[in-house]
Structures are given as structure tokens and as C-alpha cells.
Image (cartoon, rainbow, N blue to C red; front, side, top):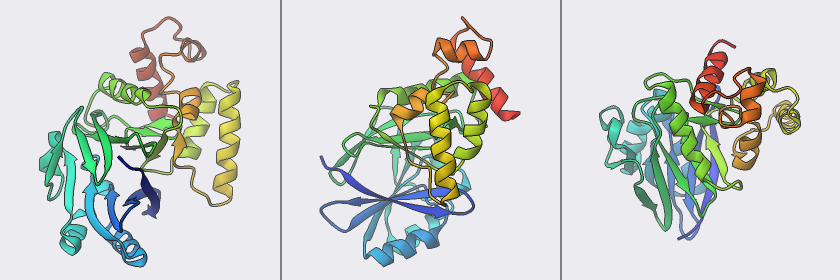
Length: 256
């Protein structure tokens, strides 16, 4: 197995697309290409050969660039089996607990429904990289559009299997707003206050806040802390099941 070189491409108003380059060659893959031009321009600039597209879910701001990229490169499109009819030009279908080899790098695949019915995530353990689409964000999680709140709770709970030194490559720059919400729930959390200060400084400097470290997210992200008695207590749900605590936090965020 091998590690991947990862490059971030900002697109649209707040999207992030990721290029994954094989360290021993000029081959590369792209994760969730919202638009074709930024990807094709970057590939041309670096002189790389785009071989794969990895899709997490069907929303246009994640797959909008697939047709033009596929036409230009004849690459292989990889995506969720559960949502193959809504992923353009899909070649390889993946489902829960599958493994996928991108060159010499192995990805563990999880079904993570909630935001959409057919969402998946890719965890490259050797590269310390989790590509989670719109399921988990820095200090947040995705809105529940097509699934249920219990499904979403189960989905983000799968990410607790990854080590603290894993980088969470989410797909949007939502971190400032997520920090404000998290602080409204848990203003006395020292780790959260320090993280929020760091986030503000990065955004004021025009620097991305993504990726974030899973170890930091475990201590500060309210959605990952739904099973933490302290988190339940600060929102007045002491003793309630974690899935109910999660549902309450998500509902509050929807109305924040």
C-alpha cells in the first residue's frame, strides 16, 4: 500500500474538490468534482494523468463536472451502488464495507446515508485521509435531506473508527458558521474556544479551515459528541439516548 499526495481545489462559493496523486507516478484521481474546468486546468498545469473520479453522492455541487471530465480524460467513475442511477456515467459501484484500490492505496468504503439516500465515504488509512462528502463537516454535519436522523447518527458514528490523526476532507467551507453554533451550545468547552479562535484567524487570513483533524473534531464537534454525557447535559438532555441528543442538536442547527 502507499500514501497519496492530496491537493485541494476551491470551487463555487464554498466547495472543495480534491486531487489525489499517486506518489510513484503522474496518475491522479479527483473526489467530488463540482465543475470540470478547475479540475482539468489543474491537471494540465501539473502535467498529471487523470484516471479516476470518486463520487460520494449525487448532488450537482459534487458531480456536476463528471460528464466533461469523463469526456476529456476517459477516466473511470467510481461511486455509490445505492445511488448509481443518479451518478453520471458511473463505472464502478461501491457499497458498505467494500474496499477500493486506487493505485496502491486502499480505501475502506462506508455507506453513510442521511444527507442523501446513497451517500458513501472513503477512508484511506495509510494516507490518514477521510473523504466524507457532506456527511461530516469541520464542527458540523450535513443536513438530513433524504434519510432520517437516526440514519445520519449511525453514519457519522462510523467515522469514530478512524484514528485521531486522520484528516477529515469534507467538501465545504462551513466552519465559521459551524463554530458559532457549537459555541452557542457549549461555550465553556476550552478545546472548542481555542479551535474557534484558530478558525477565525485562518479565515481572516484567507486560508482554508479544511481538512481538520479527527482528534480535534472528537473533542469539539457537537454532532460527534452526542454520546458524551457532558454534551447531553449542556443542552438539557442528560440521560437521553445519544441518537435523541443528536436529533436535538441537528434540529437546533437547522433553526440556528
